[in-house]
Length: 400
Ligand SMILES: Cc1cc2nc3c(=O)[nH]c(=O)nc-3n(C[C@H](O)[C@H](O)[C@H](O)COP(=O)(O)OP(=O)(O)OC[C@H]3O[C@@H](n4cnc5c(N)ncnc54)[C@H](O)[C@@H]3O)c2cc1C
Image 1 (cartoon, rainbow, N blue to C red):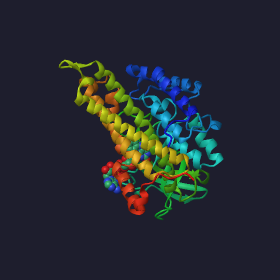
Image 2: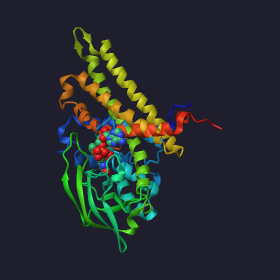
Image 3: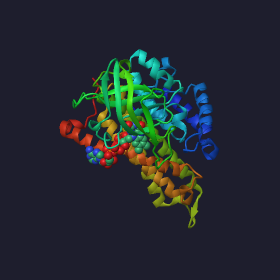
Image 4: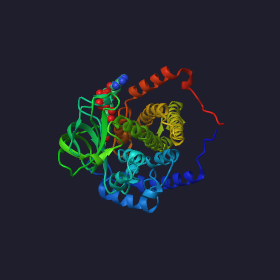
């Protein structure tokens, strides 16, 4: 059993950590570096992206032949965690959702022609992308409730329906869209690619949310005759559910990788404060009740790190890691809550203010138990595996 990172991956991890410490964290304390939706200001983002590219820390999840870093999933786990120690990190390194998940799935399943047209501009940071699946009164936890329809027409497809909470849609140029092409239970959904400049779709509203927003917000969108040519079907007609599973497997895990970094940073901020803050003649860090809080939060993050790394390893071995990803998603979402809430509590009123990024993290964290599968749904998935596999559910695997 070897829990150590290969030296070449650890070297990249350290470079990411240094970039975050020296270039990104200092930006967080100046409100001028934020846009009106509490994310990094576009001008600052442009500058920092250029710096990340210049240092060879750009799109680490993509193959080197595309201008990325060629990291295996285990390497991504180590580096993404470092990136999200800054709330600005993932988007600066081009590893933020949903571009990250979209790039990974396009790299896995698109044809070479599709990759050139739809993937490379996202990798290069020229366009943003969105993944449109969830529907008002339709698909959410259960994709079988997809009502947006694509009807076959001469040379392509005509789409009608509605989607909501589509991250980035206000800015995105490239869209991956899940629509119903037949009533077949397993082969009824198809994934399409379309460009924002095509007619036949519109943004109804940018939905106000509890937390800070990704660039382009979270939008409700309507399709009223969007025409998509056959060449822009991703995988085959009827492969939409399969594509979603391929996309969400890794995308869910990259959420975990990032959230672990955010949780760690919240604890770092709390530890700095409790080392100097006194109460009733003692430093907070010397109080047993406070030690219990930070010790518990740190342990929960470490449990999340182990589950995330194991899932990453299984993916690198060519497995689907469905159980491992579900476990990591549940545990890391909770560990993020725990660490951010603990930090806010120990900072006192300062934690509730905007003088530290902890309140930002607190509002952001609440989505972690909902997006990419609510925790209850992942528990259901695990229970189904347990029922099916019995004692085989728990395995180490063995060499030879
Ligand atoms: C910030 C944010 C960004 C998002 N970005 C995108 C995006 O880019 N693209 C996109 O397509 N979607 C996006 N979504 C939507 C997200 O994927 C859905 O919210 C999620 O899939 C849950 O669907 P729902 O909201 O319809 O909840 P529902 O399916 O209505 O479920 C509501 C609740 O019911 C419970 N529940 C549901 N099913 C079960 C079950 N089987 N067993 C037990 N309990 C259950 C859970 O507690 C769940 O939270 C985003 C959402 C948010 C909040």
